[in-house]
Length: 381
Image 1 (cartoon, one colour):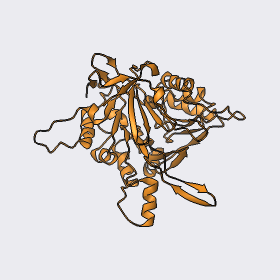
Image 2: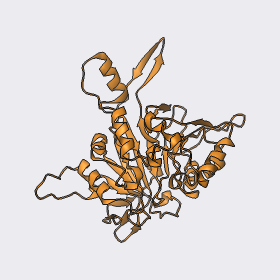
Image 3: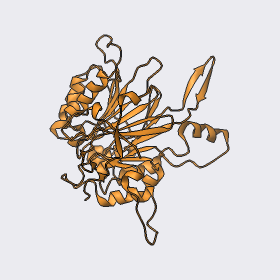
Image 4: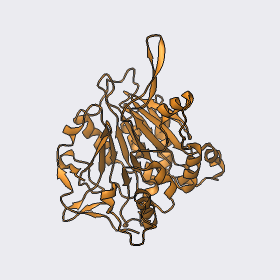
């Protein structure tokens, strides 16, 4: 069990959050909902100037809906009017990673109230008896224009310049759902989002591979645990250097390591079952984010052993005779439960990413508060 991190005053400064967002930026929101997940990715503008969003889990009813309304008000999210009653596509994808209520408690409300926006919905297909799960699936059935899929590892979806790759659940785990031979957390849909992604386009009569400079990636771990991650490490092996033309083409499309990412959202709220050293070393994130209540919740997340695994992966000191550990915030580790010395909660995290750079923002919102952009504080580390 770990107490909330208390970050020294002065590490954050008031700044214009909306004013810093440029057309090529992707903005990732990890909302402060305690021991739960509510996430939104605001994708870069497409050539028509349109932005779309991806929603990953909705723990509570109001926080995400308020954020969507605020993004629309700031003209950061919008699309043409729906055609023939179909969704306008401004929310290109909504993902329910697995049917625990701390991830889908507000999903039914999102699907009802944003039915005119959401194009596609994913869940792992793990049947659950909870009221939240049945309400969510009833909302899916009530929308005949909503695309519905149950993806497994390796499934890829391009949305504009962003590539969404499903890392888990593996097919082997998926095929055990019907007998409940897979633990519900290991049924989680974990994702890698890469932008701008390498892709094949038509130029004249030919198709060519477009390699993008400064590609960045995020890994969103849901509640996947070590069993699920062991399949991921097998399904997505690290590619070794080769000079062949085929190897160069694969490297251009996927990178040297398909698990490497700038940002990692740690799985299962920093549970001792959620991460292992090899995984975090493979990902090697610059920013590591944890959504949890900071030792004050039902399960005492984040667990100290998981925190130490992440710290060791980012700064290997275990073999030092007199180790001195860098503070979490200077290692790029942030928690939605972070406090500011003398200033209360720091709350939800937003990361503005693009062209190889990223900035971290906090909104000083408690779990029951809406995100207010005028309260934005930019990390200065």
